[in-house]
Length: 508
Image (cartoon, rainbow, N blue to C red; front, side, top):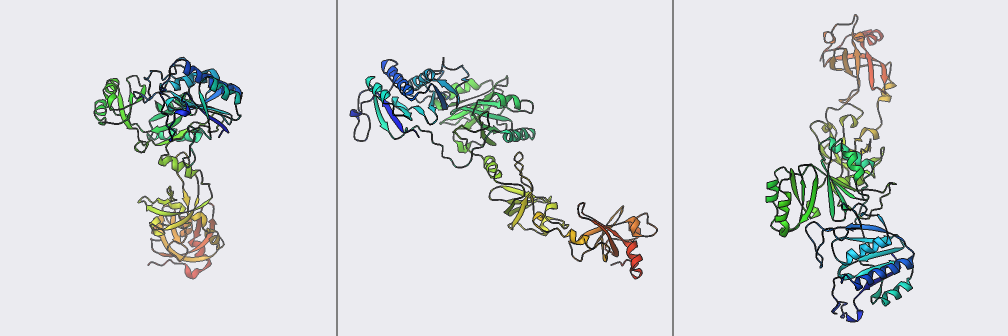
């Protein structure tokens, strides 16, 4: 906040009532003449006293479609003609303009023609234009000569603690930047046919729309306005344009988005008085949609703000966070290998377990539930159960977090490896072409090993089922345990040679 702030007006403070309201006869609109020129000269005097030559455009606004709220008649270009090209290239947040151009922007704002912005030099200087010809100038130095010059010009400089138009963005949470991770997610959503449109909010109250495709994404990205706010949408445009127009509300502001026959997407804001003109403008479009102006009723997939070329996010304005944006902020706090506690919310029929981590849903695949074999997650988990698991990965692009329950448990297989050479008896659990699996631990989820055909009988049988059946008790010798490949090799022939009295298997 700058230490020296003045409200500069053409209104004599002596003509204010006890509540501070101006009761004099001076009109609130610009005279387009000497008084307007006095305002500009006063601002120039403050800029000279502060020693600034360039100003930054901050949070710019343009005319709002059909709608104009000012006291003066609206002009088509919002007062920016001659200052910027017709597409407003160069009129964006962070754009640098020389003081003379800044003064012309002040003129446009004094004329209340639709365009608006803050003009600032960080921690040094600021010019804000408010309603009814109120101008607020701030500096890091007293600017005594500029104050005196302002009085000479017939204007009234009143010291304030701060400008009421000081930028304040106090929304909680971290703003999502449109960085490489963001664009990777956009590309993935396009590939999955979840995303189709990109809304580029290049001004505080204006948007450009782009159709997204695998082959157009990079071209769209390089054309975006610096520091623009971005919103990624599904394909919300309907080809039934007549139905879209017929669905306009009886009253209120709406944003209409339409795609012409050449594929150009346009949007504008209108109220009920402009709906007939809007309908005529949209007629003949390839597709269209009407969006509410209330941010709570708009539902893009996710949003972000473009950082500067060095990767730093300097734009102060914010997007309205979507559920995906909140997930992104949460995912940034997670790290691979970290233990987290959550609640089991669902056990899917295909075996995946879903776990709520305080608003974000992570998942555990069956192989990560236990070191031992289980048939289904419901064998060891229940919905509502609180569990602690380890994060295997944080996928910012797909917004997925796989967890592992077994990673926080001791692997019992190394203990089995210490039993190589031991002879055990266990049930045959499965017959495969290469041999038979035998459970070697006295528990339902006990480890199983393979008795290869060559180790099942002498001479080896053509088919293992000719020797044993599922459910038979078979005496085997543990001949190898591979903890890495998680394989246990068993031998019935070696067990029989070691203990002749155990040479037969038992049917049960």
